[in-house]
Image (cartoon, rainbow, N blue to C red; front, top):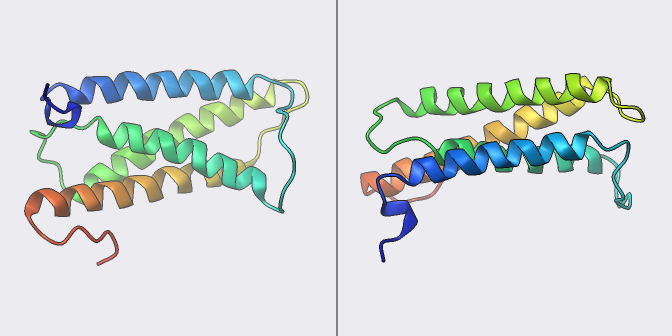
Length: 137
């Protein structure tokens, strides 16, 4: 059996997973509060960055291998999609009793999506170009 990543249609699976994750985020943000202990200051922003970072990974993984967009363009597209959904999510939370919309939550959403897209796409581009796969060089 071929690995999913080598399948030419793997991008459709990642697009479906991205949409499913958007539904989960929407469902979670519809709750007045989520039962999570406060472990440290800024935990809420880290949770936002992680949730939207996963969304960024799924969206970045949904690009076809045959698409020849530049690295910067792909990172920008993923960041705009994640930030746009983050804006939608914050606007939605404005109308949920017990929740509020926050610029800093949107910033954490966007940052998580950008960092994940940058690191994953950098790794992926170096891996397939035959270079060392370090995301920071």
